[in-house]
Image 1 (cartoon, helix red, strand yellow):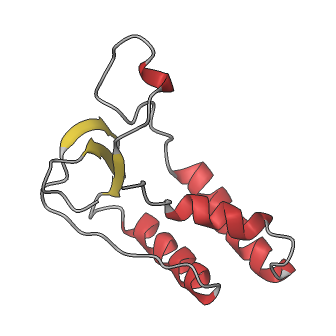
Image 2 (cartoon, helix red, strand yellow):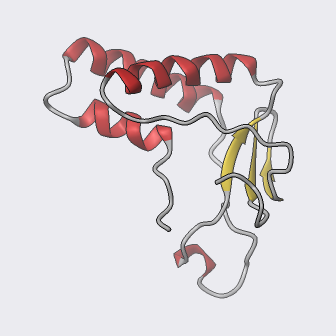
Length: 118
């Protein structure tokens, strides 16, 4: 099964589409820039540290912490715009996200357990 596209990838795709309305592009890019300023970029998405690990397909999924209310609000704003343009965005909630690979104030990256929603 192929990995799902993340909503940040979908937002970039929409913003970079020349057919997207200029006002929508600006709004999407404003939200993307906000995340760029307010969300750390995880340094890894895989538990492995074997030779060439950075070339292998990543397995980790990013999750917002429940306390990241402003980030979640911005994510839902972006979700709404994406859905208007036909992107299917599914909100995932999970108590057992997997093996923690990275964590900061607002997010956790985890390699999912076999029974974790993906």
